[in-house]
Image 1 (cartoon, rainbow, N blue to C red):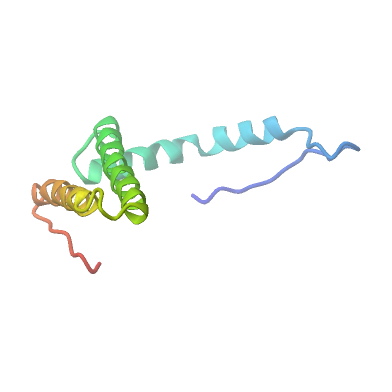
Image 2: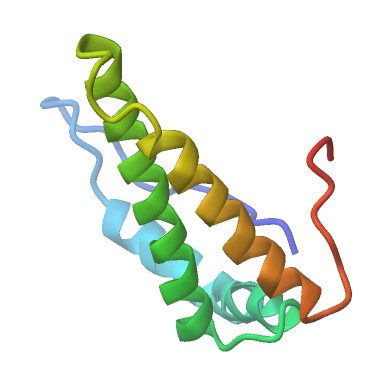
Length: 111
């Protein structure tokens, strides 16, 4: 169900919106069941709980951050961290690919 957004508040002379908290509360109450379903849908598709997926995704984000930081340092100081970014990205690829192979899938690098 797509969210139906509406706002019933008024804008006062200070240009602040009144009733915004009611607007947010109404949106949360109306769409909470759909949001909860969506939170659990993808992790279940890949055979994980929400929290297992959360940890896995954060680990991947950490690898991405490490690779990005190594690339920035290497850009300024090319004699440092020559292989760190590429090695980190390769490890990240292998972790995701290993996870997908548990389900008989494989990563298509061009997809």
